[in-house]
Length: 310
Image 1 (tube, helix red, strand yellow):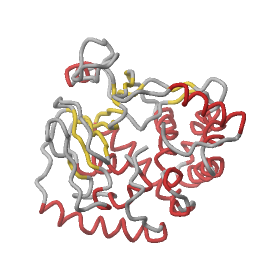
Image 2 (image 1 turned 120 degrees about the vertical axis):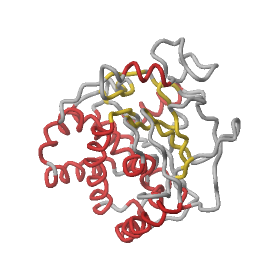
Image 3 (image 1 turned 135 degrees about the vertical axis):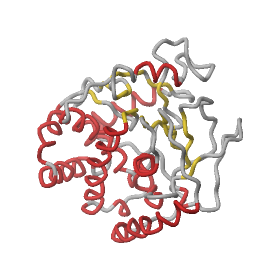
Image 4 (image 1 turned 30 degrees about the vertical axis):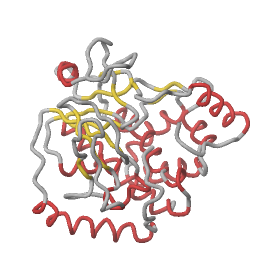
């Protein structure tokens, strides 16, 4: 997950006030900043530090949490391309310490006019399904390029990462075992759905009882579906933040809203009966599978919760 632990912490009781102030500034920000030109397909790549980005027209590198670090402007250390900040227009940049990469998602929802929109992460990218086409060398699976995504979108409105399988855990038990206060967070999320959007409750229960899910907060969608998903997601998360104050947690644990959102994507997809295509996921960094596996087992059998991202 992306977070700016060194940034200012915003008490959650001030969150609504802060969001309203952000929205009040939106008109002035839009006048001051050049509007983003529309594209057919644009995928935001969320980052909170300088990092080499895919050199392809598909991708928009985004600096998340810019409002928390107004004097810091990020750029690709290889190409020099500046990252687009998430604090212009209608935004929740000041809440990045809690929402992680979702501040980029919110910005794309409110400010990007592209026909298809998506989200990726500086350490997690969609990979080419063919292994032969891509924009970055040196990976077993290369990062997918515009042309391949465009071909897929001729026959589907949604592209997702392949499901993550947990095998010996359900989605609910895994989150409860691995995350501090995880069981409570899922319980409150369920109550919110029951109160605000009860049509999503059957899918939520089904996803929680399952052993696989589309996680990572990664997807590419046709604009109407992208907007529909965001219109479902953010009110739920804002209500959740009002009932469980992220400011009570430190660092890793305070970013639980971003993790809950990973469990809500399939809920939205199932309820709305959405079809989709899938692509593999690739990381530009070495994945320590031994550490991931032992941490998973320690959480399952030893009640040792995660304290950082892997």
